[in-house]
Amino acid sequence: MVLKIRKYGDPVLETPCDPVTEFGSDELKQLVDNMFETMYANKGVGLAAPQVGVSKRLTVIDPSAGEDPEAKIVLVNPELVKLEGRQVGEEGCLSIPGFREDVKRAMRVKVKAKDAAGETIELEGEELLARAIQHENDHLNGVLFLKHLSPLKRDMIRRKIRKLQQSGEWD
Image (tube, rainbow, N blue to C red; front, side, top):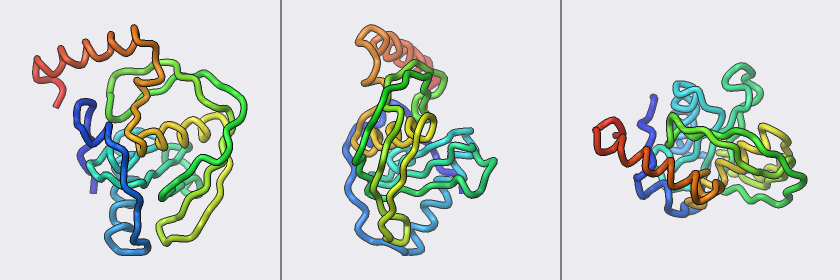
């Protein structure tokens, strides 16, 4: 089922999430499936639970955007344990549609997390995967990619969003 994506302005997006404590439940499996379906329907490569209104430390990522079934990643209660190098690249966010900006991120990351069944996993990624892991992990900490922009760019985007909200084009 495709879920409603929360947009900038919804407080759930800027609130740190609670850890997932129950693993392997039908409810968790269904949420993961719905999040992948929602992400693909919106042409994303990552989606965090708060983006669908669930304040839990859960994210789904697929850098292949659905092209490779083996590329699907579920990270529950992720911790970034290593960040290396530097990259600058364009990022967007399903919760801030229509806006894309260059963001500085680490080139390579190592993350430790649980899968949906509660098994511990470690994953290393670079380039797009590293960017997606960092972006989605930020969501779990209540941080939007706008916080990585200069104050001038951030204010410009916020003003544009306010105008969209006032005109009813930002629900």
